[in-house]
Amino acid sequence: NAGVTQTPKFQVLKTGQSMTLQCAQDMNHEYMSWYRQDPGMGLRLIHYSVGAGITDQGEVPNGYNVSRSTTEDFPLRLLSAAPSQTSVYFCASSYSKSVGAQEQYFGPGTRLTVT
Amino acid sequence: AQSVTQPDIHITVSEGASLELRCNYSYGATPYLFWYVQSPGQGLQLLLKYFSGDTLVQGIKGFEAEFKRSQSSFNLRKPSVHWSDAAEYFCAVGAGTYKYIFGTGTRLKVLA
Image (cartoon, rainbow over all chains, first blue to last red; front, top):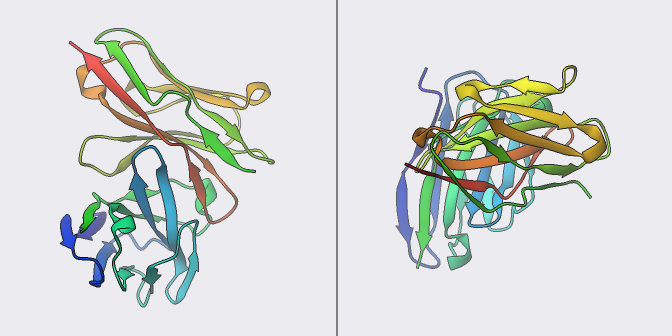
């Protein structure tokens, strides 16, 4: 198993540009999520999904869109990048949608810089 | 409000010394508690978890943690630190069905 994969590893965007961060898992996990990690703030939940076609907002959803058309993929879209979105982004998955009682498996992260 | 507090932003210990990383939580129900480790440039990896039962839980890499309900704490310990333990450590609580709440992390530096 490859586990949770994320592409790209690094990205630099100009303000106003759009892009999609890719996330895929090959473990047939129900639950997938996106976090951003900022210094001194830990990990904050952006969006999550409890199955194909089902997504919901987390703690910091503004400026981000998600969709989940398949069990395996959960892309994160930035429609108009802002410097405040400079961060490290992690995708994670969990076997059960009851993630509060489950281990999450994390991807290696995408480091995004918006200038 | 639900929260997780890791009061130590940075900790430095010498190789071979013992380690304790503090974690306090605020959660209304019986919590599910986790410790994750993040090595430089990597994603997070689960060290251990507490759901119920024995309040002292063992994890990978020689780590253990003790759940103390009366103190709302879930501190991580290791008797003898190795240089490879240098990393950032995150405590988390399962906050309801669909979410975690993470602490802000403690960065561990190990002196040779």
